Image 1: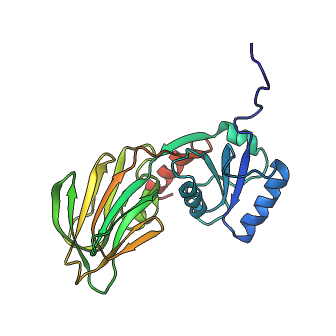
Image 2: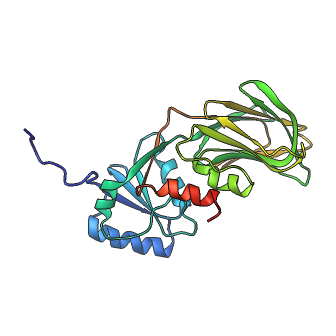
Image 3: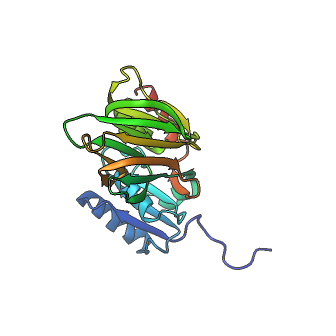
Length: 262
């Protein structure tokens, strides 16, 4: 026999976070008036209001805390966001599907020998800092796969990030539940016909920067940038879970639409 008060909904403590735009701020005020003001730190679920940027910000804020985040689109693209609608929010949250994704862990070494790590939900990318192209050596699980890549840069994308910068660089779109990473060159010059690789999300990617003094590069994990790096290691951080909530079938449909150019 059940005891105590049975919860009416899947999430009882709902917090709202705005991207800071006037539209998102107004939406937050209206939703708080309906559902109350809850501290995101103690809430059962966070509703992010804005575009994909605010979704990434909220996920970084609660990195490692397994805080479910449900986005509602008040931005431009909003690939990770659900349709904005004030009505029936609790019912939508009850019915939402949860996707567990993992961030990338980037570890860099700079010219002074300093080692710094950062996580990326979308992608880690390396790009040239001067007019000269970057030269990079690529290893996968300790085995050299490309002795020299001459390009503007290189990125490693998660399935979440495969429709972002990776897609713009002509990289492949990965289903959200695929156990893969995309390795994609940015404006590659040599090898002329190399278009990248699909890797297991258990792989360790090592990028050695060649001629680092003459051809300096920076490494970026989402929004965190490090300059003058000489070595970058990237691996999927399976110990860290991020919970994305979405309306049933939403991400699968968007993924197919992108692949077929709809």
